[in-house]
Length: 264
Length: 260
Image 1 (cartoon, helix red, strand yellow):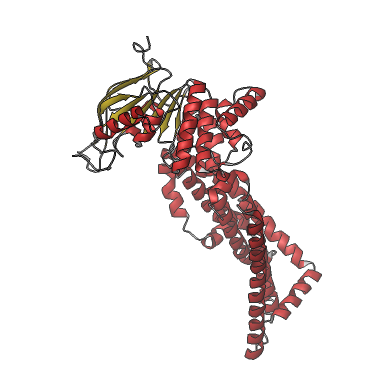
Image 2 (cartoon, each protein chain N blue to C red):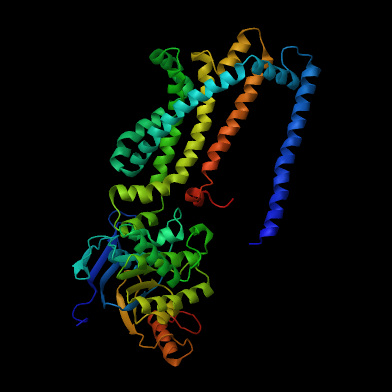
């Protein structure tokens, strides 16, 4: 490999990766601004009004409070989903009887939208933090369990055979070979699940609680049609979702799992 | 003595798999019998898909023969055994471990110092000094096969089952791997059973070449390669044995055409 050449290419690529989105972003903002002005709408905000809305929220101390509230619920629901989903998926992937017994029910529960669970969650947990945490757990546990399960089922047989050849069985076989072989795909499942969890927290907060970014959006709409705050909430949701995804992506860079993601 | 008690003893082994048609099993092996003495280097050659890998997998304990007896080191094969390590064509090196960790994989029960020493020894023996901290994805295909061989040797395997281990490598790498394997085998006194479809490879490596027939396969001939090592690939002795195996397999070594 020619190091200087690849470095040079990388900087050119990086420059493109920053400049192009910036350019498109400016175009979109300008188009948005022009569209609002031309339509003469005094309800839908311009980008600048959204920015003012964000500043107002920050000054009232609500922005940080709501972000923390939403992240708190996601952290709990998502962590629970990882703690339960990963072991569950590994067990289902390894033990055929467990798979045969439980997989049909997982496949039936999985397509039910977490939104459909909202009435049930309110009935069971009331209008407290527990309800959205339950919904986030439900939404993220399935992608995690299913990806862990298929990671074990689809692991390369040659690793299993090599491990058995060295006399590994039971827990050591699991810890030293099955888990590391499945880890790249488990992390992919975790990444998808975190995206889903963030989608669901906002939906859950629109109904069940009185804080958080989802609540902000519904509250701003109901209490005086403050669409600048509605869009400000949407923008924050987008950016925080992006940051969460970037954080999980860093997991894919570890040497122990990098082999599982092909050439990039 | 060794002839009385061979290390590997395969007697009248049959193997069939369930085919696409439930009533029509696929017969892969029929009447397969051969033996391998301790310290011997034996190659099995045969047409692609003839069942030579199946035979090796039976010996490795990954498959169970339909009929016959398979004894290794005096006992029937009951499953994979850490004393007899399989080297896979598709490479069974663990990609989540470094080269050093892979080579030391079978040594976790040993004291740390001894493990480190053995790892270094075999790292050097297979010519990978300096790559101990690398990950397999950073190595070439040939280097990864070296790691797998070192892993087997480090774990003190007495027998190596090699299933076309160089099949996926380019021509020059393959030549180098062959001469290195012979050097390692001479230094380590292991018993090697090596499956390949490459006749030249077999004649370069083996003490004895077992020629298998088309499916259902049996051992149709045995060719002794009593040539000194390293082997001269232009010597009349080498060419004569190579051509004999070619004609045994129904091929003309010079034109490559089929005789029948």
